[in-house]
Length: 347
Image (cartoon, rainbow, N blue to C red):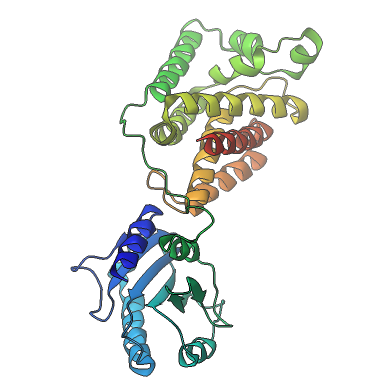
């Protein structure tokens, strides 16, 4: 049993959970306790070994502990979470009718903000019992229970970590190149000429076959606010993506996304010219969104909900404001999702 517990604890940490230490909220009747933030939900997994099956006493203690955690504002203030899901897992060698009856007697109310789930995992039969009213799939924990016994069909997906490098050469080079082109363009007083020569244009692409504009338009910006907003976005999302996936993969995602944004803008947009790096930036945002989703873990300090909110808000802003290539943003986002999926599968 001890070996199984260690295997389970090692595996659950690999998917983004971390163990509560002694100086954090914990109760002595819990053998091991793990927490994961996936805003707006805070997940807690409490591991209990065989021997704690005085259900009446245990339930009272657990409910008190659960209530204390729920009302502890300090426990939530830095997580930006408004919901709590606590999974109480009993590890047991064998299961009887009393335990099944206990599980089936429990209710589950999805509309509530705080939930306490009860699972029993029979390490002899390698089987999870959840009761007829309890969810049996939460954050892939059910797969980790099986994998820790060596019976799962495949290994649970581990959370991807930074590749070990703090250097972000591609991101910084793109910032420098975009800034340099903008400065030269403004110093020469040829803003309009640069946009007309290198901007994404339906007329010149379809009539004169100037397909190079699909790429060169990514390096042209119309004014100071345009270049500054894109540089900030490029640094924020590019630096995180490059640390996770490395420079080579970030280059692939960025340029595929930018080209996809240019193509969709050309096909569906109404502007005579479209310029800017935002298609590639939306692709990097999509890259991080996909990564946070499949790994169920924060990516560079941002979780799935936060990145999704940023993407939706920015796309909606594009629809409400003139002179913004919304289709370029959408195309870049879709290109980022697809290219990241391919890279993720290959890795």
